[in-house]
Image (cartoon, rainbow, N blue to C red; front, side, top):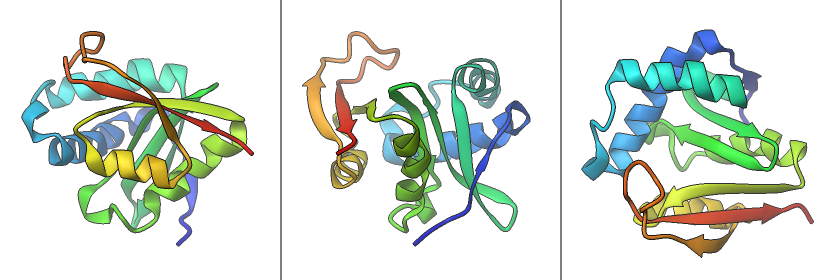
Length: 148
């Protein structure tokens, strides 16, 4: 399935933060509540939109998923839980893959659904950590994709 992907701007940070929190808390409930909604929105507005190109998919005017990427990296990719498994995430990968011949990203080792998604979309796990280097202190895995 193909979705229309639009460029998002810092004014969309609140909506992006809500999609992030809904997806994050659904897949990683043991990490829920790590930040307040206001902290999430400020992070996206001040850091993610400053450093990344952000694209999103809307349905009926409401954001259902987004990707934030920069040279060589996907920093964020989240889809609302009820829309996962329907092609939204794969569509969101397309602009990043078109922009850069090599992409890397981090995800948590325990997020089996995300790991399957990235592997199906051509990413290969290249390194695992014990989580001591991330804010959540959650073991993570580095994935890499190479354009062929």
